[in-house]
Amino acid sequence: MAQDARLDEVLARLDQGLDTALDRLIAFLRIPSISTDPAHAGDVRAAAEWLRDELAGIGFDAAVRDTPGHPMVVARSQPGGARPLLFYGHYDVQPVDPLSLWDRSPFDPRIEDTPAGRIIRARGASDDKGQLMTFVEAFRAWRDVHGEVPPDLILLFEGEEESGSPSLRPFLRDNADALRASLAMICDTELFGGTRPAIVTQLRGLVGEEVVIRGADRDLHSGLFGGLAANPIMILAQALAALRDADGRVTLPGFYDGVQDLSPGLRRDWESLGFDAGTMLGRVGLSHPVGEQGRMPVEMAWNRPTAEINGITGGYTGDGFKTVLPAEARAKVSFRLTGTQDPAQIRAAFRDHVRGFLPPDCTAEFHEHGGSPASVMDTSDPAFAAARQALGDEWGQDAAFIGSGGSIPIAGDFKTILGMDSMLIGFARDDDRIHSPNEKYDVQSFAKGARSWARVIAALR
Image (cartoon, rainbow, N blue to C red):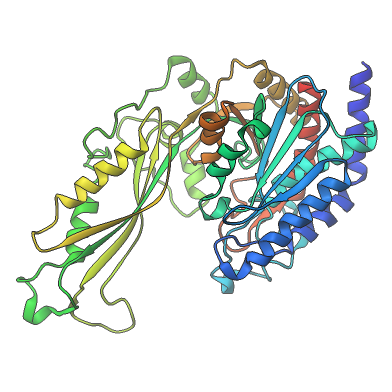
């Protein structure tokens, strides 16, 4: 009962301090920490230093740690807890283009009243500064009530997540002993259906590839050379179109090696969630799911691998018309992986597939854009049941164990490099417009997110 009373004090402190917490989040959001743009390298460091100062101010031993790229923020509390926990988030943000589609400056955050409630609109509001700050505000309120932050916490806040995390794995390897904990907590996911708390228990992996097909040594007149010379766009289009068959299955040899069907128990759990593909697609102007025949929509979204074309260019695409056979064509392709699919094997199979379409005098060049296996968490750890109960207490409904179609490579890195599972709890909503103009974050999500973490921390101490 004593601990429950102290938790109530922490929750009350969070409620009382919401306005000042929002002020801190707004200050953080003003920093244009775009990690992909070298022009913003100073802003990325400024965001790291801002975080370091905030964490030091509430009692963490906090430091900005340099890497070959953007810095990491690492903080820790005093030893003495029941089990060490690592908390991960990222403070870098996506570029803002196209700027013309924003209703206001992306780095001039404001709180707006909308028919759906109060929101904060700014780049990074939901992904991931707002979510990261739910950690920080929970720790702050805990310190205010208990006199110190909880013991045995490690905080790792990254500045390169939106640019592929090139420095992360070397940093984890070099600092493995200092960063290893019993469980990693990640706040970069969503509520289920926009209102129900959720713990993500599996993530799809990812392989990214860019391919360049080259033919003649210059663009050619299609009247003089059409029908005679190879057309790189046609070659590329044929190779890409052949990635899937009429039933929606990927055609690469060995692609489904390691893919696992749902267990009967997990199938029942997911069926009970009431996942509505029509509602989800309707929010983006679509209505009919596509994909593998004979699979339920939630299974296709969370537990089946994919092959997608993310971009394709070549030839003349300006105003008017220019009848050329282009000298080269480019495409960016991604594969989402499940089960134990091997990213290296998928990458090699894709490259062999493309080469099979090349005429003798054409070439293909490939560029890697990340690769990580799928992640499946061990929910038999009692921490998952305790966190599920804590979330249910806060939100008034049972937390769902769900999958995610997205890829958060850090979860796999924590497993393979540090030997620990991750618990992914997030408070974003599916209409937050992350990576898009007019990104937002609900004030309620921010407030209840911080309260949720206070409950989870209390449950795991």
